[in-house]
Image 1: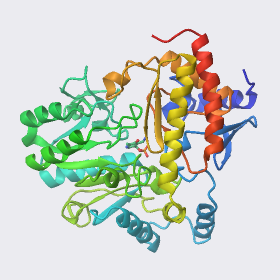
Image 2 (image 1 turned 180 degrees about the vertical axis):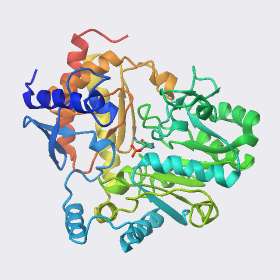
Image 3 (image 1 turned 90 degrees about the vertical axis):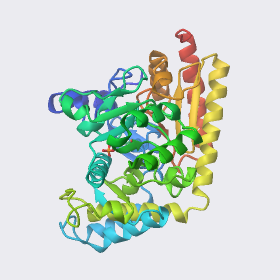
Image 4 (image 1 turned 90 degrees about the horizontal axis):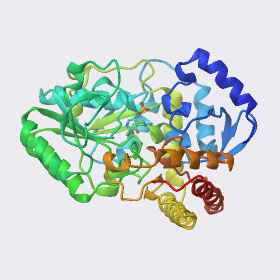
Length: 436
Ligand code: PMP
């Protein structure tokens, strides 16, 4: 095992200072065991830990770093914005500049509101939906993650349609009870929920490609049912593009699959590595937001000028990179194919789900289409594979149920380096004992 004395010492101190030693749970390596490596810096496709080791980055800060780290255009824009001051709590032209770029990519959006995180975006979008419809219930899908607001920390029981049971202590039962849960990707089950609760549902919130149970691409029939059922019952369709926005296409999953949403949520790529979220939609819905309407939502740092500058520079750099989405599509497919071949050669059963630059290697032998099938993965085999990858210099998300993210900095040669490491890691998994 590589020695990581600096990371180990930092984690020791951090455990005294932060719950579990971290400021966001999955960073603690709880799902895979071991001590997390502290990042000292990152550049292009690489991150460097506190002990000076270099890794190929397949986490990409959990999505934002589509261009890789330290893209020169983003750094330039930040340096320029920095000279003007870092926060004013007053409107700026920079907010308009980023908003115009969003609307250019999402033509069905008239107005939007910037927040500082994806959590605030989804939480606020649901408040707007409730304010606009006068209804209380919202529906989410099992295994969907939309941030950590009370009403969204709710998962289903055993794949059936259930009224929400909180999946975190501290979420009041009365709040969780307002969240209905249905299995992801199941149009028939969704129809049944609407038959039963249709008149009470303010909104359905959905990851248009799931990333938070690992990557799962839904069927066209499911996506169609979402639109038809919400429209037929007067509920709003909230498409959570926090992960997929600006990643799966210029106009996100909405463009890629030709979706029609009432409200859209963004985050991650939108801020180019700085803290940004946003929600938006047609004027009719967004005009419920204060100070115009009666749905209150605010933020001291919302529309922060540095964040706006990084976001605008990121979206411009995406447009300035010839065939960026085509290239990401090809490297995603190349990585997925290579991973399947390497696992096969080692005799390790895996299911690789890949959509564009999002990808999950499930240590499973049957197709993964929802939370129930994802949950049948061999998480011990994943943990072994993860640690072997890390030893071979690949920084992979430290949980079976997460998406790996490709960046444009990860070129074909670097994908091949990942594949060599993955092949060695599958070999180690096979030697440790075949998964169930
Ligand atoms: N929605 C989705 C689909 C997400 O993936 C995430 C974060 N992973 C969020 C919302 C919450 O965003 P944030 O962590 O910025 O609050």
